[in-house]
Length: 342
Image (cartoon, rainbow, N blue to C red; front, side):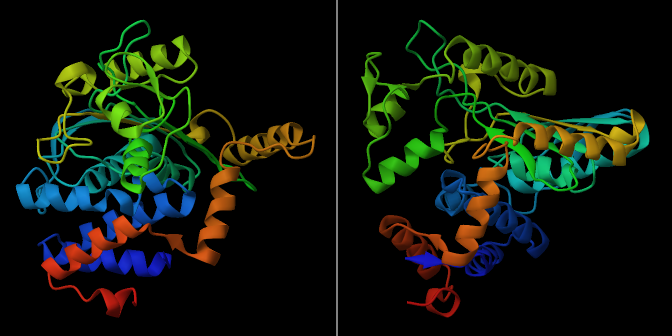
């Protein structure tokens, strides 16, 4: 079945408020989740929602956690999320990074003791909508083996960059692995195979079985290049921000243990370097040059296309996910039929 973005948002807010999540925070979680589904990142959209419910029930996600500032300077801050919703903690962190960038030219905010935050690109989008450059990196619990190894030590370690433009959505949001772990989890739930050249089983043998891949390791994208980038992100989103690293990272995929990963948010104010309007004009000029040949996409075009499609056709729910969500509704007294329909 398909649901509308509005139905998905209302469903998430209704369930979360039943679990004592403040409405303001529930709206943020819902907005990030719907944004992921509309862009086509279904592995990080409502398919992840049952994971969050488990975290709330067990206590690894604290519904009313307050973000605290551990260190701060005019351009930087280190935040402790106190195990609140990753979406809310990162949203607040990006708000702070943008404010600092306006004041000093750059804002750099590190985060620890947070949780899975959905898609990284949502937060870089916050910056580009304000004519700022946004950069988001994070580490995750081990899923990727170093080149030449078979034991997962690195995370899938996402990177997102958003750049303001007059006429285009300019954004990249990607894992540094050949596939996001969430896509493997989604394939497992749907009973589907994964593509070749994405993952290895526990013995280090290539596999297209998502169950075997989740027990084994995901390959880095671009061989040594993806591995090197993931390695650097592991350090900048781990030790640099007072978070865990390597095999000590937990909780991004398994909600039954505390999340120990870290995030690093960077915002640049172009006006502190050049005229901001001229900057956007030159961005658009470069895009026109790139698109001078037909059928060329820039980073962000696929998301724009997906948003149009899913707003028109609705967001698909597979049967397993549908019944997981209906069970959650029944458990917490939320009327599925009233919000979504039969």
